[in-house]
Image (cartoon, rainbow, N blue to C red; front, side, top):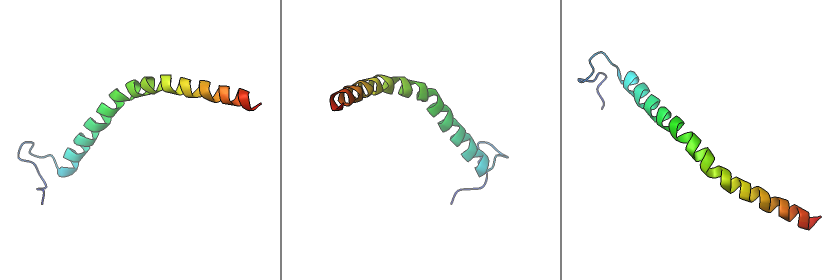
Length: 59
């Protein structure tokens, strides 16, 4: 079982350590997010063009 306090950071509870780890993960994901959005944008533009072409053919 995990100890309730860490020897490296005396006074910091397990909840504090979990919060720090969670904050680091959210921070990294927040930094990566714009690259993912701009990476998908070109694919979405291609899909939109294909759907517009299909709609023109169906009319």
